Image 1 (cartoon, rainbow, N blue to C red):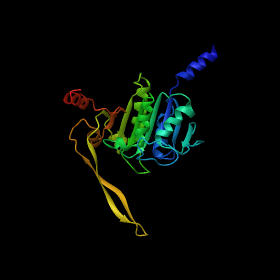
Image 2: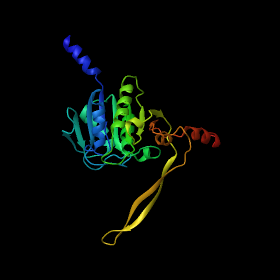
Image 3: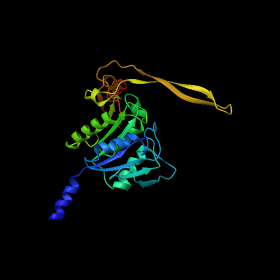
Image 4: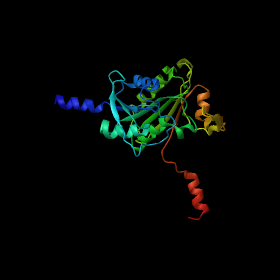
Length: 265
């Protein structure tokens, strides 16, 4: 009887998978682990090197390696030679041998609002979890500095995860959460938003290396074309934590209906 009760208690402890795209050594993932490690059994599987901008890339044609590491006190952790999406896949199949109750990705160093979600390794890891029917959240702090203050991001990450773990979640839930780079006392709370139509107006600077060989360096300026007050960019500008529900189904349903009618199909 005692064994059954113990097994039941262990089963009730939520399993929290944590990953990122900045690498297992990044301050952001340490901050996220610290924020939630007492909310369940935390297991970390993260890239062994930075993978920013990898999007939903997976490793094909070369071996993947995963090694157990001692990075976080009292937390099981592994570093993986692959992409953020590889980390989620391997975590489910080879580390946990089950689906976790929730997958958290981040805390990313830098913004993943608006169009950035398309390129983000942080959010692709979260979306991969969603594809696998694992509720997920990607967290990003609008500060690229290695010395960024994660206290505000930690506070709201913990608050949100705590609230969600107490609810029956949609198995495909995926939230893109961005936090302004301001002190905790300046944050006004959380807002559920839509993704702004904003993007980088990019250009490639043409340069010469020391051997006089030509190369290109991507540069650009972030431009917000969206004046709506219900967007992530607007919320962040006004010191709110933005929460955007995202999905892996890219079908444009309104256009689908229009196209069906216009083509008579």
